[in-house]
Amino acid sequence: MSGGLDDPASDPDLRAAEYVLGTLDPGERAEMARAITTDAGAAARVRAWERRLSPLLSAIPPVAPPPRVRAALLRALAARSAGAPDPLAHLRRQVRRWQIATAGTGLLAAGLALFVAVGSRPEPEGGRYLAVVQGGGALPALIVRVDTRTGTAQVRPVGAEAPAGRSLQLWYVGAEGPKPLGLVGADASRVSLPQGASPDGVLAVSVEPPGGSPSGQPTGPVVYTGKLIAE
Image (cartoon, rainbow, N blue to C red; front, side, top):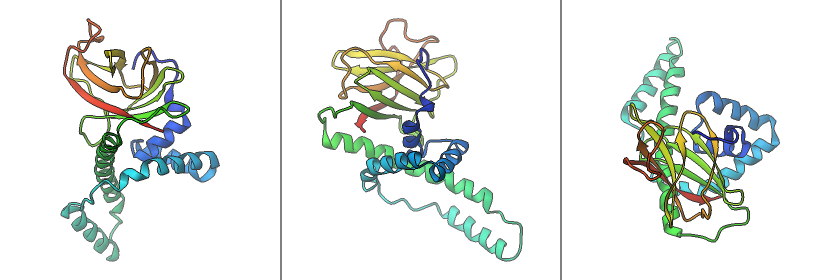
């Protein structure tokens, strides 16, 4: 994302939200898990996000693991009982990836469904919102934290991928139409919201020519979207 003011990856509250959502990479997740055991503040932030997001879990239907996962686990346990080298390390990594992909997709879908069900709510004191911007994949494209008091948004790319030779551009879509926020890159950043931005708006990502839209309006297909959920 171009034009950032600082690095939102350093925001401990946003990092706690990503930990609960399961979108951190293995190294970041291990670091966060260690912090939870030694830092009371980190543990409190994670518990707070678990409370905020826990109502969404009841909306996710149970998903049985693929038969191959159970069969592989039984084979691994049998081999371990026979004294063979422990093959579970690789299996654990495979199962973990499958769990994150399945749970992440369900959680994001449930979050969007819950937002639509309850409709727009009055802006809470503090004006802080979280948007999971995604296009139906296993992982979100972006996680965006919006503060309407300061008129800024923290943007962290997760799974956004631009087609070869093209750029991805983030937009705030409100009552006055799309307003550009910046290009989506590999690094986290902070961007400015358009004047009058409200929690009723939608965030969207479109495919544009290199360097962004030449007209100030989306010119290519919209590949990712996300609504704002009050913190």
